[in-house]
Length: 426
RNA sequence: GGAGAGAUGGCCGAGCGGUUGAAGGCAGCUGCCUGCUAAGCAGUUGUAGGGGUUAAACUCUACCGGGGGUUCGAAUCCCCCUCUCUCCGCCA
Image 1 (spheres, rainbow, N blue to C red):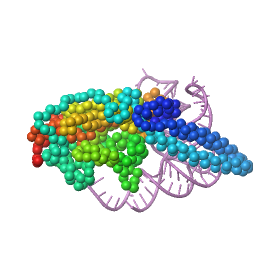
Image 2: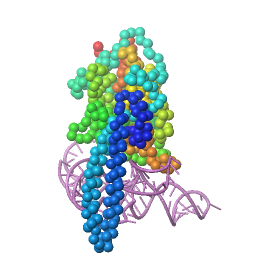
Image 3: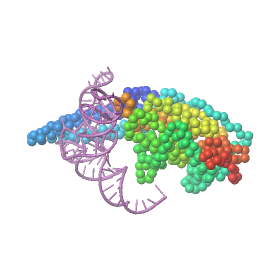
Image 4: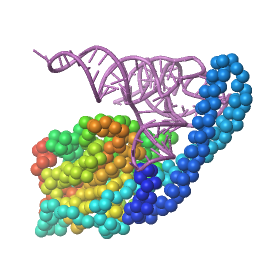
């Protein structure tokens, strides 16, 4: 959520910056805000009067004197207060709903653009692998190696699910362990294993609700949701808390499955592991002092990149433009891994700074060292990495002419020493 | 699923329908004292939203899980909801 005072003082500027993202009309804000304040002043004056008179009544009663006249007057005042309070409540609800629907303002360094066509490649790391045979995609490889069973997955759960088998299942587990170990031992993150179901407040806190409910799996008959990303439970760990500045930065990493409806993605990536209703991800989340959030974003992105480097995968870092940056984010880097079978780079991680947007919604603050009022922390998060897509990348990039797939060196200890996935069937 | 208990400030914890923003304690901050550490003494410290100011000062309102109600007046009385805990049942 944007700061209401900021909007009040910088309406033009905010409107201009929102326009970089898309079509947002800030005009109703001013009207609602003025209306709200007018009502507030009226009702507060009445309440002041009521409080004063109540004190008088108390004194009179104590002195055993008659207070009927004052009490009679207050009857009317109280009724009027009730009326205005009701109207005011409706007005505030409307204003709040409006604010909740506004995305964050993008950072000034973010390239201006309408859609993903405006994204800018910041750097490319590694080289495209060269193949002297016709490459297979991960679907073909997964089937011929007998490590992914898409048909039975659909029998179990429907379209857009996967069933990993044998070395395939182990590969996911190996990747997960490898990533968590890397982040906890070398990057200073604390491992967390959160609930995979959260209350709706958590989704409001991180920005999935109220606007993107159609993307979430809701628990029937309850205000709970399956998590679409670990970002939701991990960021909300400190919801409604006042931290101390000494505790910052806080860095958490977590493995979780992620559940997404993928509404509106009909026809896109319908086959394979790329786009599923359930996928595994290792996430990084940070709570930092506002002054540090942009350097922390670079560091977080570097932490995610390190996974790709250690796995020996070719990738590029893309800075999302204003039109493509997510709702809650001020600035986002996507990591895109090279997929030879698709002859293209595909998103495997997204690293974002949310500044105080989520913190304001979730009430995550810290007490500054020098004293003074609690301030909102800045929150960041990034995938490091999406495990399923990492499997895709490994299969496709490490495939051999004979249909086998070499296991990257760093994963072998996690694979019981296995160095190669062997061809099993045609 | 059944029975009970509870929800108060950064934390713990009192609370009679009428100066209760809320006792007491802890933690924090500021002094004083003590050659270190600890202790002691005094003072001080909530959040949000309005008004006001260049900024402060100042001032008003609200906030004792959430929402309704009773009342001139509710942390205190009534109703509904949510959540947490304990016990029983079931269960990995």
